[in-house]
Length: 416
Image (cartoon, rainbow, N blue to C red):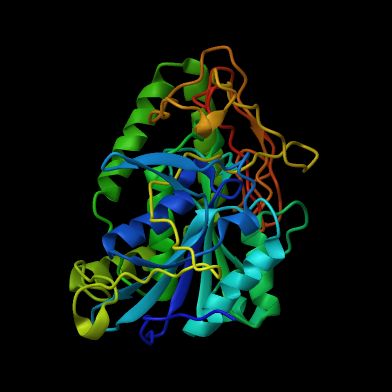
């Protein structure tokens, strides 16, 4: 039995979730939820017990200093609540964490327990996958659901994906079986520049979320970051003729595939978003988190069953992007990062430098052959130009592409 103390009654709550790891190419989805939490100053009210769901040799805890005192932050999934003000106030329950290592059904049931107790009306799960989409074009974002009625009423695609799945797919199916409306939003990240961050994909996910739940989301510096990211990738691509030629091929395939669909639907959606922002509808940019009687935001921390205090929110560790799949449709195992002297690897290695924006693969190295398997994957130009969300595509980038280097975590394409 989940007991929530100190959380007031919520207004038309929507749960928005994202998980680092297999379903999060370029960290686009987890960064989107982190942006919502930061802009609306969310306060954590619950954290799942890390002992129940995580393998600490895979997702290692981190040690940090607090006024000279060493403390440990355990990898887990945290929930926060924010109140979105404006003409139509509503509350968001934000779920952000790492894809669990074990006991996925119990993990989903615990999240659904929170959703039930809080009266959540809709669950939106965001993910990102690798695709053969050019970085110079708008990021494709597809919305899928397992609910046929929801697909009709919200103009979504009904998923028909078959194959390996991640926690996004499992949570969506758990919601469907529990009778909770659930939608997955998938952004396609260019496979040849898959390393995080990818602010352009994050921005595309937030724009689609805006349309889905009819809210105005303050974007802050994201639009400028997205433009800077694209300029950086443009410069890297221009330095290698093979990469530039490959990007041009993707552009031509994408433009040809989308030409028949250049009707008024996308234009109308963009125009509605423009009007919503111009008129200041939806949320007030300065809206904060829930607080008692409209006062200062309260800290809703939930203790473990054994009485232990939940760990404080900390900066999330660097994680893998979405997993790529090969031509056989099976997820391809990424190359392991270099080990540190003490035996730790990847994000756990002390002193590991973060990956820079738009970093380029050494010339002559192979670009990953990615075929994003996702129920929400858009028709991927460069393959057959299909629009079937369950279809996968195979596209080999040119030698010397701007994909992630061998020392970084490899990206895996997610599925639905």
